[in-house]
Length: 80
Image 1 (cartoon, rainbow, N blue to C red):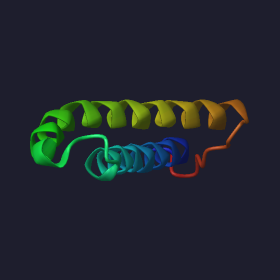
Image 2: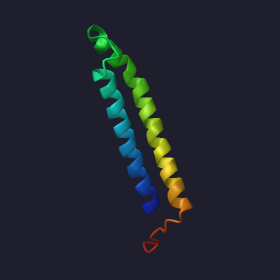
Image 3: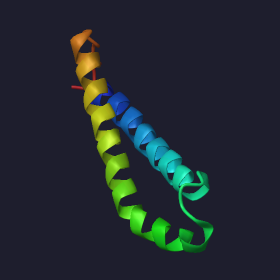
Image 4: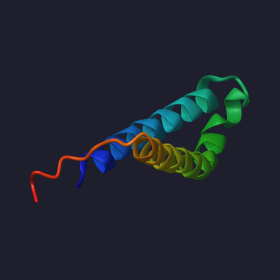
């Protein structure tokens, strides 16, 4: 895998994980849901929160790959 794709993959993975943690933290401790039904809402919302965090991670991966290609990030071709 090239350096360009590794950098993009790392930034996408970090942003997807951060988006999931922040969204789930806000769901659990944000005070939006009454305490008595928190377990039900947290279980139901797990799928959409994961879907959104994966979409954010993919968007950041694509955007990082685009920007690094646009500014002319040079890849190391010595391994070929």
